[in-house]
Image (cartoon, rainbow, N blue to C red):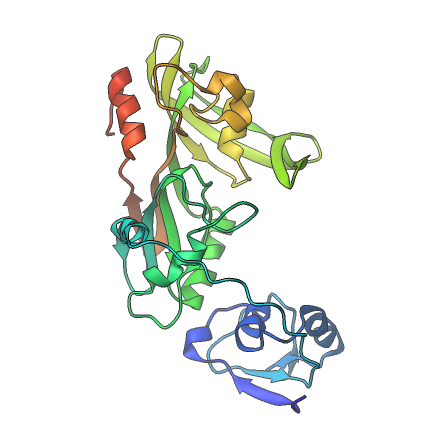
Length: 314
């Protein structure tokens, strides 16, 4: 057990949360011990009491008290991937600068690991370092079978800044979806409360519930094929889990291929069975200007649009 340490925040750690700083530099420092030390004032930043979510700045001094290390845990088996999977990820990059890297997330790739997931984007982030010592960090999420624009931060300060922009709704996300059915209105707004609940076997499902959190989506029909299919633009104002999928399913027009929320009605004998939800565009403030990213549609989505005679571009 070492004595009290006073450590200067490095440039690489500028903008990182204090609890994540501890996780990075003192991985054996138990989280519960850290929280108790913060309440007692044993952990300080520039001699001041702080909370675990405090953002650190380069040059600040963090006081680290003596602690009993967390018992060593069994190391996880390293995750591996093929060269083809690595090349697919590298080929998905649509933008890169010193702060961010933006990809067009492939269909079927989970963003993070979980039950039954053998390989996730999070596992493969070393492929997207591009010369940096640290791996990029996830700023937001897309479902496993949702494709399109996904932004990652390359520095802690950028991660903190981007997270704040998403949290305070200063970004604009535009999705395209093919629906099984056609909305009654050509344009409108869906707003209700959504609640995540367990459906057993470690699985969760979201549904409307007055005890949930407010969820708002704007929609606009781009094209329709009779009453059977439609191409729709979706703009989520909030970012609830599975928000777009639930809103479309509960409106009676589930996203094509979304069996979880649409059941059998989400599938057609005429089209492929994959999910037709694509993060088409992302606009985000950056250095006093707006960065705009657009992701090309995946092959299965394009095939359906051509089959139905729908436009493939704006």
